[in-house]
Amino acid sequence: MTSLIQATDATLSREPVDLVLTSGERPSTPTQTVLIELGDRSYPIVIGQGLLGKANTYATLPPAASAFVVTNTMVESLYADALRADLASRYAKVHCVVLPDGEAHKTWQTLNLIFDALLQHGCDRNTVLFALGGGVVGDMTGFAAASFMRGVPFVQVPTTLLAQVDSSVGGKTGINHPLGKNMIGAFHQPLLVVCDLDTLDTLPARELSAGLAEVIKYGPIYDMDFMAWLESHIDALRACDRVALAHAVRCSCEIKAAVVGADEREAGLRAILNFGHTFGHAIESGMGYGVWLHGEGVGAGMLMAAELSRRLGLVDAAFCARLRALVARAGLPVRAPVLDANDNAGRYLELMRVDKKAQAGEIRFVLIDGPGKAVLRTAPDALVREVVNTCCAPA
Ligand code: NAD
Ligand code: GLY
Image 1 (cartoon, rainbow, N blue to C red):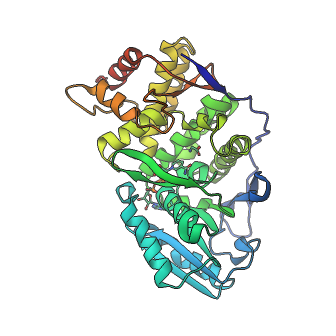
Image 2: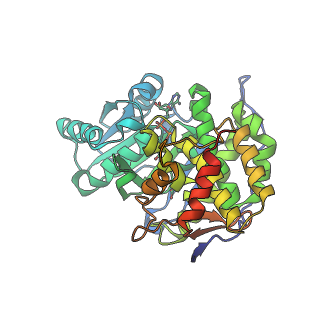
């Protein structure tokens, strides 16, 4: 077994923001900005309330001839008019394409709908794409922007918690393949990320919980103080408390910014952001895309990865129990699903060998090497089988 990478300790200051009362009665949080530092590809993540519906949210973007909004049927009905109105004051033309909703549509066929609409509307290299929606819309819009006319600029306007804390940041874009999750894609950084916390008001509770999985992951891999903060604010987060959400989104983006800033193309360190994802992706593709939400797969996957870490002597049982309690309190499933009644562990292993981190068929897991520190390691199949059997067993 080889230890390949190691996370550094967190040194960021993350004091919770104060509550501010605006002229109306509605409590609000101040707008905050986190910078992703990538040289000439650096960009801000703006986090706040009421950002949709404000034309000056986009004032820093360079001039362009037209804007092209990509969204889906659900989000279009909620937020597309507001974004289109914001953009109308800056762009001579604002076009829009509405995709079918759901992980099952993160495919070549749906991607092609974006290209069809771009070409039908006469869009060119002076068009800026705007991804309005969750991670599915964001990943597909980013991939379309990376490849349309060999690359056009794009902006992320994430409307799910998961997208605000993770998928809209860092430039990973792509689609699924029937044989593996996120297998086709490109690195392409956005010009700007706009996280309007008010959009989370309409998010179903199950989707909010799925987003919390990606928030929780930042604790074990990078910052146990953040994990402790989550333990005392998880109920507030599930209740959509603005101040708590603003803090969670900002901390998550700061940690992601630090990791991506150090390793944009996942030569090493960035792999830690995939804690729980090797098992989780197997769950998603093994169950059929969309049956388990991405965040649900990550939640159960983190517990499997923690259990594997324990069996390798890297963490103790108390750490696993602590993580499990937090995942449960976030409203996420803690028991992994059975993917094959005959050889469940074998099916997990088969699916995980397709993982992008695998090398020559050898699976490399993101494991916890003591709380707050992640490593990328291989593990014997027999041990992985034991973990699958334990984590999928009925309670
Ligand atoms: P999603 O995009 O499917 O959105 C979840 C659901 O919420 C959808 O039905 C959507 O229409 C709906 N929705 C979106 N915003 C809403 C709102 N404000 N109110 C009501 N409903 C709303 O799923 P997701 O969890 O946002 O993203 C998951 C995807 O992100 C997966 O495909 C995953 O692979 C990807 N991802 C990518 C990265 C990356 O770095 N690029 C990181 C993590 C996850
Ligand atoms: N969500 C994993 C990454 O951005 O690297």
